[in-house]
Structures are given as structure tokens and as C-alpha cells.
Length: 77
Image (cartoon, rainbow, N blue to C red; front, side, top):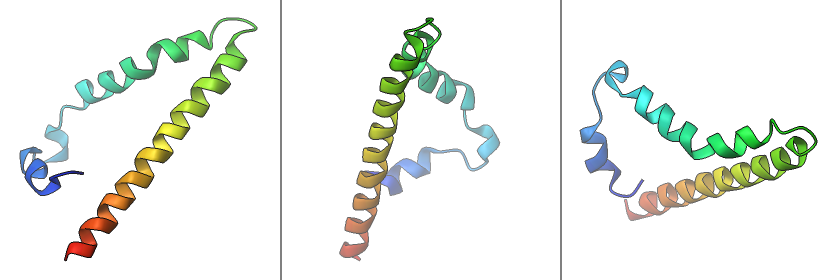
């Protein structure tokens, strides 16, 4: 979100030209090990609960900070 006006100029005009494969692989690599640990019998449920809690907590923090940054930018206008 920082310096969005400059960064958005580097994105492709057509959404189909975006490199979704590398974007998805980067995301997958981030959570891959934690999600695989959920497949372990008996340990899977507690591990899954912790992993999902942390992932949702981080997503929530990211969403709140993105909102704050947008709100701050609107205040400058």
C-alpha cells in the first residue's frame, strides 16, 4: 500500500497477463509445511487449530493496517 500509485504502474493492464502461478506458489510455500502437519493423525487437529488461528490473526492485522493506511491517505487529500 505504501507508494501504491507508483507500484500500480508496474502491474499489467490486463489481469490475464499477471503471473498468477508465481503468486500462488509464493503463497503456497508460505503455508505449505504448516498445512501438511495437519495430515498427521491425532496431531493434525491441534496443529491445524494453531496454524489457522495464526494465519487468520495475521490476515486480520494486515487488513486493519491496510484500512488504516487508506484512511491516512484520505486525510491528506
